[in-house]
Length: 511
Image (cartoon, helix red, strand yellow):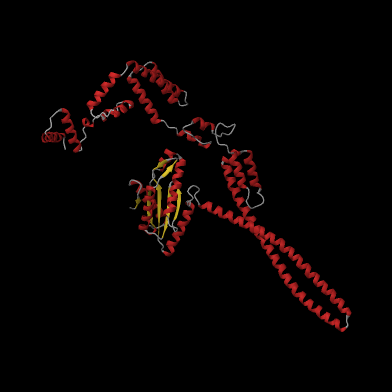
């Protein structure tokens, strides 16, 4: 609709309503017709087009007096000008100028050369009472400074302590710097932990090379940052593992020897008991011979019986002591083995778990992929994989900080765990990228899972320090039977993920 058509509609409406054609009546009717036609006319915006040009205090007064039309606004401003005291306005300008000078002087003492230069320029213009053009240019210069100012350089100090961008003094006072060094990192604490970790957890002592390396690190902590140290550390770690393994083998050998000795003692006791039974039977026959008046045989029988009884008692006593000692050693070995098994379980779990999200790490995911691939090749068991990536995650870190980013990753990991079945494998593939291995699931079933995750993330409230962070996820899904190899399957799901990114994010591909 054109402006001419709106004018004709306005005339017809005035005729139909029989109103007097005053300028105000015509303007009101014209604006109503323009609004009805969806036509924006600046003259119909009322006083709103002027409100952005008026100071906040005057604007509040205008709202209180319920000024609606342009004519009412003009009358209000004329009335306000009539009431204004020239002396009072002049004093107000002087006070504002003095306040601006003090603020500029305060900025001048800060540790930013660009801000100090602008502050000095501001003071000079205020002292010479520069004109409106100079003041406007100065205002634009300050606006440019605020737009371009970047304080991310402060994050370089995060290696030495906590960085508070709102309190520079607090940041500087909280830094931990190594005495005698203008730059660099204090490796002393790190070296103490590293040397402790080189001590074998099972073997009773360290090898000579590891002892020498430990002593070298204590004397020169900065040696830990060298390439030579990296090589020596790899060798020392390998030796530590070898020593622990050898110690375990030795302990198992001792345990085997103890069991063999125990078995020998028991067999010997059994054999001795059998011999004793024979000898006791002979003694019985000798004792029966006493009835035939053979006292010499009685003494012989008594002596033999005493000898057998003493030997048997001594053997049982020795065996009892050996059993007690061996039992204590076996108990001690059992406790040691149980402790080793517990340490091994913790180490195995740690090597397969992402430290932040507590999901499987990339290494564990690749192991499960190998298992699924073997099942597919041998038995034709179908499976799909989904590649998930948080949208605009870098902006979360840049806007709210890396701690907020970590909180978002942890929360997203919980969502993945909630939506996954017990047979599904979910893990962190790297950075903000995750992977889900969906066993016995084709592409359609995979889409259902991915859409549930995407919707859950979209509706979730990601909060950090009282602020809600809007988070969405893009997902690429692919099934094994559509690709010639496992590597091609992974690349395919990755390509679908980037398709989702290119098509606007917060979506599942193939859709």
